[in-house]
Image (cartoon, rainbow, N blue to C red; front, top):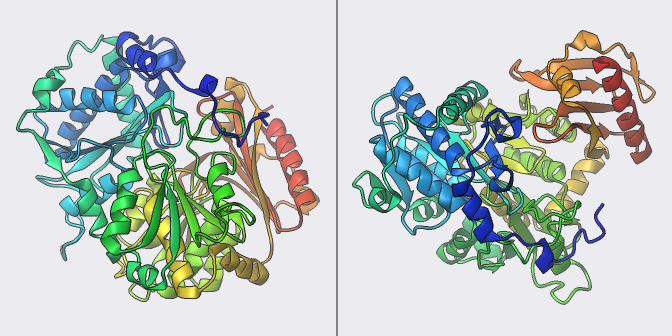
Length: 559
């Protein structure tokens, strides 16, 4: 833990924006260096120009690979392009426009020449492809749309990121991103020789670049997914903190459009994110699930503070607004797992327009409290590997009413039971918290307490363990037979999983279960560690025992 975790950033913590952007254009990556290769994780390619892992070369190659992929798949409609407020995002957007226009692709960019949240891009793709029509959403055929979002999500200000959203509006699957990454690396090795580009000043004036009003399209449709009239009528007082991200103008518009008592916190974007409090490791990170990154909002809501009692609810979002953070006067920042359980219980009890067959999507590293809630509701539980891409199909065909990740990312259906977004949507989860306050008269944290009383208390945490690159590779490809242990923290092992029970996809690691606990281990894609997720329904001490036992089980399995 850094000594200044949770404290406001100081001048020495801030990035040199000019240097960062200059290196984006100047550095040529060496693809022989694994750090400088194009690598798509669960949410696209991320890196920084400071070490040559996110440069103009990378972005041009990825955009060109997307062009080839679209042609191979017969995707000939417009591409919806969004970006967040990170310093590298606007330069990267310019690069993408140069490549796409030269390739003859119609590009739809923000009409305000500003940032665009990920959920707004997904929403516009789906509307274009027929989400609001009785025929249902098209995912193939002439004129169909897809998208690119330029964002490193909650990553530090030094970072850039780019991800591809397919014709289903959601994050592209591993087969697609794997192909794009391989082709992009080939193009980089070739020195981008085959890539045509049009200088941005000419490209942006081309007839292929269409100004699209992402914000109005999204905000005007919000009452189809959230009971905003209930929030307005109840007078729920909301403080919405964008953490300097793409949500800033959207929250102001939402408040005005629906007459909400809503105050936007940190309304001015700042590429240095100088108003942020430092995360646990001393870095600036726009992680709305971190109590350290959310320290200012926690202080705003804390009993005894200057603003105590001023708001009924405070909410946060990350850089591209696909994640949510919920702060209540009686409970502080909610654990993301706790709010996911609350959201699921509330929605499936109150959305009468949803199909009785719609299930609940969760990642296998999310709390087992969700399993208990699903069983109590009598709803199917679809447990998947980590990655929101695994929920896109279910949300699209409405076989899932809700899909959510332990990292505070989720989406759910419209009130009438049709698809809303197939990527994570921080706005609707934040607004759902306000709807819960409005309709139940209690905070989401109080709602969670009732679930705990009904289903039992659990203790959940994620920790990291050191691992070499070779050990991480072994863990990623582990077989269930490699686990020889029969007990875990004093309980018999009931399951050894290397594939997800919900869809049979590879976990890329291991999950071990007992009657009252579980752990999952996954290698990090960027650091020499593996992540241990664990939960106990016994006690905090038992959780520590599970974590210790998890290290021993993994060490034995990969040794």
